Length: 140
Image (cartoon, rainbow, N blue to C red):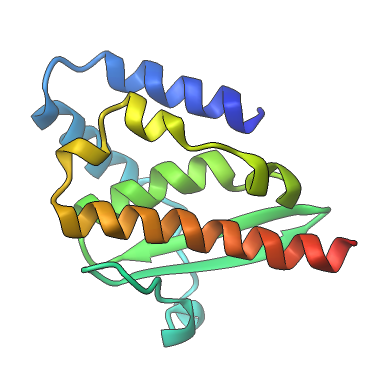
């Protein structure tokens, strides 16, 4: 699936819920289904700077596509990173770099997060794109 298709799928899923409590519960469930990061990658270098909670992200290149794994010590944050990983994992670096993230506004995520969590969300996206830039450079 393309990044765009995955984003549309997530927008559709979030539109099924009537209120934000249900959406938060759904995000928590998504966090529980996150492919867990290997303990050896839970190191300071893999912590996303700018997040209030701890979020570890590890990226590996497999067949010209980036595979992400992650974890967080906070349940909502874990749900947020799970959404991002679902969209970007298994994609080509160039596609990740060029992807827009308007779907986050479409599901209303940013406006329903505290300012510190919203900043953390921006930091997560930035970090995933930085991995993509690094791997794209290796491919060139």
